[in-house]
Length: 160
Image (cartoon, rainbow, N blue to C red):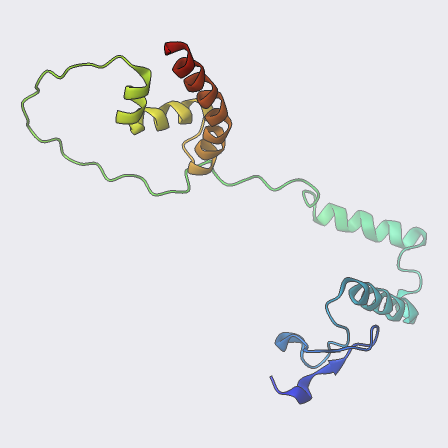
């Protein structure tokens, strides 16, 4: 935008670059005080028009509001959220390979299980969260981390 496109704000008197979508009629900058002044000025201009003088008063107004509410019965109600589906894509099913199952040594240590099977940990946390969304699992995991660290530190000190 060229320097000539700058405008002086009608409230703070500082130069600003108007938004390109509002280039022809933006007269105030984006500072909060200037935005408030712009709003009050536009309300003042609207109320000065003769057709708007009694827009908010009298029986005509209450009748107009009643009619509008009849035409828009659920306007004030909260919009129902969309179906509760996970935001991530579903995993593509993979065919199982025919492999011989070999007996493996089962290690019963909790730390070893948690380190070796991250899917178990994620599944457990999702069950606690009651959701499969990554954001929900992460927030529950953040709450559980200090508890787990306390337990592991206590176990480490009690061994010695």
